[in-house]
Image 1 (tube, chains in turn cyan, yellow):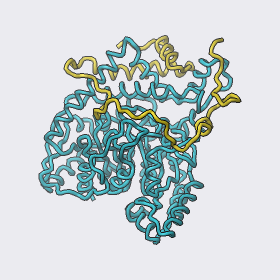
Image 2 (image 1 turned 180 degrees about the vertical axis):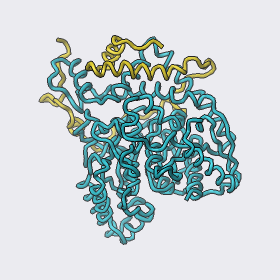
Image 3 (image 1 turned 135 degrees about the vertical axis):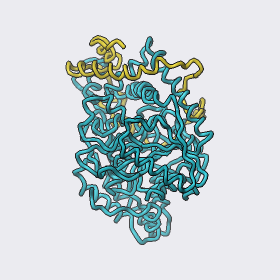
Image 4 (image 1 turned 120 degrees about the horizontal axis):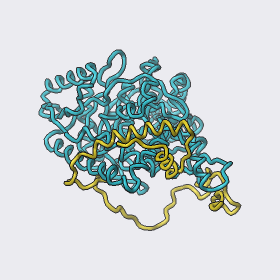
Length: 478
Length: 98
């Protein structure tokens, strides 16, 4: 683990820039130097140094003119490389998009820039965000900052490792089935998955449109709230976006835990859970009870079906979303093809990695007429059952507490021979995506030097309540 | 479940516009069969009371005015990644009929 100095809270960094006590150029140069120093961890696909420095200069000049560049003035960040950005390529860590230069930026990036934040680099991921370890990146595997022989989790592994190594104060990830929370847990940082639709996904490379969300990976809950607040809200370019119920996600003051009702779901504490994780969760439960919280165990019977449901619905949506990579409009195109059909097939076969192909084919299978009712429709019905069972829990409880992952970070190569084993890594996280609820992973101690992640979930649109509760739990854990 | 045959996998690949080499064919036959066996656990569940869900926040038919908006990028910007364009600026593809 590196000796990089931790960043101050984001609000303090920005305040210092606005006050003229620090400069955006200094911050960006510092961040770029840290990225270069830690190149061995394989975190960054490409830096946006030229554009970042130019923007930093503009921000410093604005400050000199007496203007306020915003709540994230001069704050450097790293975006997962499935966000479209100007000033660098956008590859989704896939060969088929190698060299792709986005013609416009993701709304999330635009909104962060409007508050003065500066994107300094693009982080590694499992290609197209298909994976739990970054080992499915077509380029390289990111190493876990706590043990370089282990994975950082995925798919936003580069983003989480970047924050763990203090390369930047925050990073952006995407979460389709746990892709923010799992790497946050494995790397010992905070990862936030908002309510479905709270943050626009325009300009983010689609994986599974009915579960994809965007969220921050940060050093603290307060930082996550601030970054979320800057990104949230309706966008005419993403028709699934919601008007935020509570606008000020930056106000995440800790709450009194007395009388808070927290559910532990039996199915998320399976007998296969390592003792270190079980003991860790139990010790947090004890601390919560001492603070006056009411913690009870409940059962969600359909939860045992959530992962199977997920691995039908998500590949189905992937097979549809990835049909656009056909070698005609953008991306790798095989020039030796002699007919259009051959061009599709050859471009996709050479440009897509093994996991993308596997998921496209699983998705194609479950959508094939004849199998549609038995797989896809059945999964959509299980999804309804899961939603109603979670709704029942949230009638009685403020939040659900669970481990984020069934293990700590595993060894590089440990699960690559068995895709199903790898899929099982997502068992604790997929339910939040299938039901659209917000969820957060907090660092909660460690086992043999490897971080343990604690997950809190709340009902849809209760993002502010979840962040405040998480802030109190964060205090409790520190 | 019945394990996928090589022909099943090849048919899927054809539908998905992917060609497979021998090694991929063999490993996908195993792996996709394994994943399908896993997800088949849903098939015994009684779901007669459950409507299917495709959208989780309840939004329906989000409409907007049909007007052109300027998002700050041009047609040329959008086509700048295209492998092959005609002189007139259209996307050029290989012939459709052989």
